[in-house]
Image 1: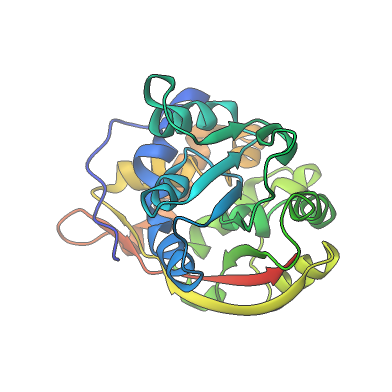
Image 2: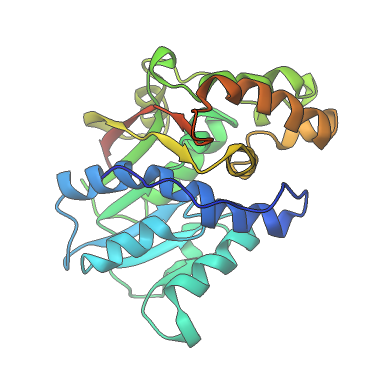
Amino acid sequence: MTPTLVRRHRPSSSSPESRARDWAEIQERMLVPLYEAVYERLEVGSGTRLLSLGCGSGLALLMAASRGAAVSGVDPDGRRLALARERLLPEGAGAARLGHGAPESVMDAGSPPFNLVTAFDPLYCAGGSAQGMATALARAASCAERGAPVVLAGWGPQERCAASGALRVAARLADPMCAPARWRPCGRDDLENLAQQAGLQPDGSGRVACPYGYADMGSAVRGMLSTGAFDAAVRATDEEQVVKELSEALHPYLRRDGTVWMPNVFRYLIARA
């Protein structure tokens, strides 16, 4: 599935609430081909008990639930999590479980273990502390059945990711003291190394084209800012400077009709708990 262009949006805002909404309305859907490819390969359906690490505003969970899966998700961003609740638990109904923090927050005593764990957000796997991520993955895997697949996602080869230029702006402007929050290219074996640190056994991988398509430059800037990759750069400089340099980095992908189109490739790894 190729994502459609996101409709036009209002100018950028520095409000954390607006950034969360931008993620849900603009950016999250760019990873739909990744979600679909993994769910199809692993035959996600009515027998699936899914735990999503970094579930964001819940689009991947919603897609799994539409296949009949029982879904649970955790995310450190309370604003995104609130949007996920709006999507998955309208008027308090539904069986989805959402929590802030550790996987145990979405488990009840005596509930069956998960049989699929996902960590789809490529910034989650290419950004912060590898040791911290490995610990989180190991903790999630301990809540899953023995041998259950644990899916990690990251950027594909840098030369095949048009977004790399924009993300380098974030790394260059960020305070060096905020290195864990800075983007860096995903190395060839990063996902395998992360899995092994978490005590997981790699068991297959794949690549998926996930182009970023936006209706105009304003939507492109807001979508990229909503990822969190630019937060350290904004703290180190100011939002106006970040927006200016980000717009310049996105300009080569501005088309004659005013839309912005950036081809990207993501890679996923299937490991076993």
